[in-house]
Length: 208
Image 1 (spheres, rainbow, N blue to C red):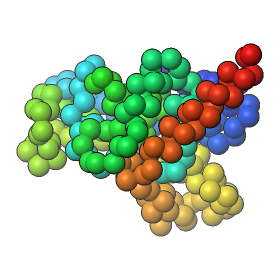
Image 2 (cartoon, one colour):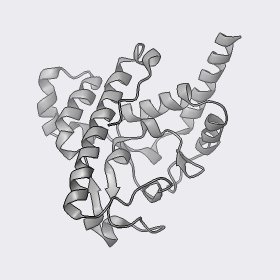
Image 3 (cartoon, rainbow, N blue to C red):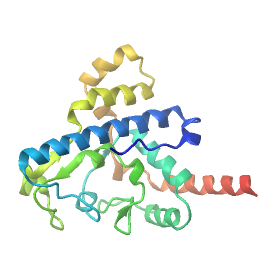
Image 4 (cartoon, one colour):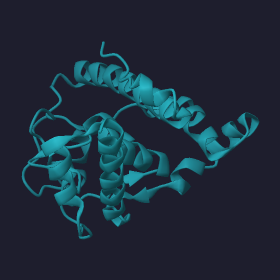
């Protein structure tokens, strides 16, 4: 079983990052278990695999501000060199619906910090055809994992909004997290470029 992604230096400085990475690990673990059971039940394999990116095109990707903050942090602090430069170029002036802004050369540039929906959504039977909306053409092949661990994920994410622990359960039941969500492509993603450049200058000065 794959372990939790760890960035000890940064987690020591950013408590929110600890919770976000914990939540992603919970989601990934539950999704793997769900996919194993669903594969056995259907008798067919998951069609998603390396190079598959149909769900990165012309899709609304719901995210919370902490998922965006994770992407922002990863792009600025972890990406370097050509990988960072390629993403900067991609983000500059990005605003139209189409391919995900973080899809660079056919691959997710921020894969370790990709949003929940990108981790949980899968398609069975056969790979999506270019431009196919699987929810319309063959909805039965669509499967989203980790649905039974929503409350556990809420206990990681909702307190980040300054919510007292005694209020987490009822806020989860009332759809608090989904109300906090926005669509990734509607956000001012070019602001991330400014932060990436600032962080790069800071690192250069620190290492001078």
